[in-house]
Amino acid sequence: MPTIRPITDLQNADEISELCHSNQEPVFITKNGYGDLVVMSMATYERQMALLEVYKKLGEAESQLNSGAELLDGPEVFSALRKKYGQ
Image (tube, rainbow, N blue to C red):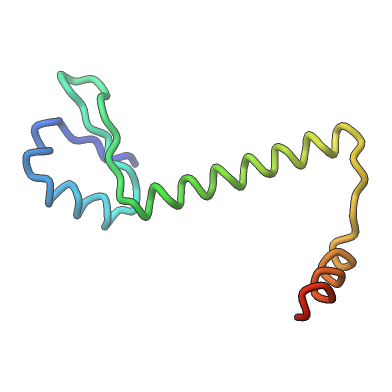
């Protein structure tokens, strides 16, 4: 369930910060009853950006697959990488 707070609550920034960190989710700020801002911790922001990057890469892979790109065997690829980098 999203956390929604009025903009006047930003006067107590420590409380909003604690709310963002404890819930690990964005806090939606309203102004005159309408959505205005989204506030989140840096950790939540970085997690969201990482997830977005994963979705982007999955979309690119799906596009390559649909355009007929050659599929590679996972174990063979990882074996070649281990040989190349000595692990």
